Amino acid sequence: MLLPFKEAFKDHIVGIIVDNAKTHSAKTYSINDFSKSIGTKCPIDSIEYINDNGQLVSVPCYFSKGQCKGLSKGLVELAKDLKVNISPSMKLSEIRTRLSTHSAFQNISKLELLAQKYHVKVIFCPKFHCELNSIEGLWCDMKRYIRAHSDQTFPTMLSLIPKSRVSFEERKIQMKHFRRFWRSLTAYSQGQSYGEVLKLFFSQLCRSDIASHRRISNSKLS
Image 1 (cartoon, rainbow, N blue to C red):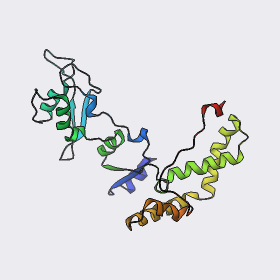
Image 2: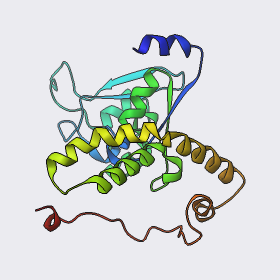
Image 3: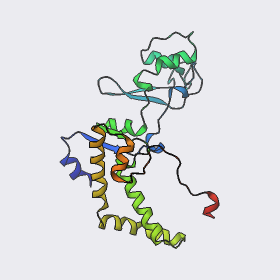
Image 4: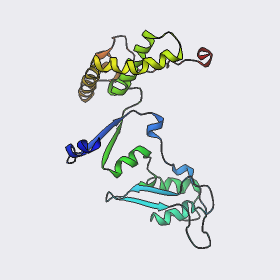
């Protein structure tokens, strides 16, 4: 199924817009996950990053031979592999600060790292910006449909989920969300604030700050 897509867009620069959920923006590792010395804590087997030449570089975090075989390298040894000049006498906090600016320890998500391998750019939507996130519009419309037709039983809810998707497609709601996305980008490029953009599509009573989020408590689920 992907072959026609790849053929049609093989000469294009591909970018994807992703919801800024924790599962999407989760990091493979952090500089704070590593300790200083050999044999100390290490969360992963190897560090992968894109160097200045756009090439994927993999640095093993464990010794594969010698008297330290099987032990983690620690930040002091990793710094040598990364060609970062540090002194073994430096404190752990100082080493972390020094290494944190290296590409190997830049905060990049697992999704972005995967996309970079295929020369795809990932752009995360700002949190709580539903006007820029069409997929959130889909979820909202599906939940609206299910609430309107639900009898509060689990079997009915399961049957309504596919029907809600069909309803969304039949009414072509996606076109509304696409228009909202591009109009929002235009408004932001003109210097309008978040609150002003919200009022373009919703109510003049919209607030630009997040007061709270609705959620169903455990007591309501039973």
